[in-house]
Image 1 (cartoon, rainbow, N blue to C red):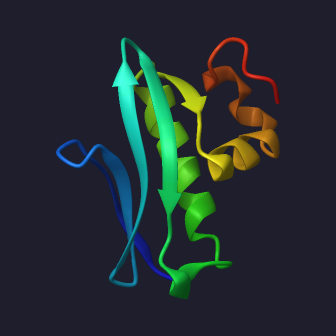
Image 2 (image 1 turned 45 degrees about the vertical axis):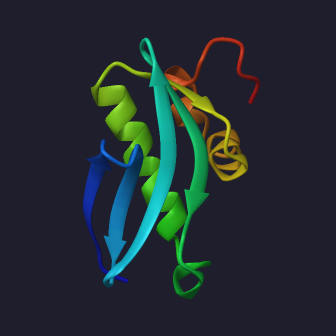
Length: 97
């Protein structure tokens, strides 16, 4: 699997990665310094190959680097952070892991 081009597509309000020519994305919105992650979408052909995990990890790195607090409203993002306690520092206050 070749993963490239992580980017913040501000026009579509989504973080994206290109995987072998297929687009995976996380939809979001922001309010103040909070980043609300609302939906993760990965093409069926890529499911079970780590594309979603790579996308979430890249998104959380982006949040940390940009001083944003993450509110995981998407069930996959919540699942990911619950299984990766190293990301607790970027989560919104009151989020229970």
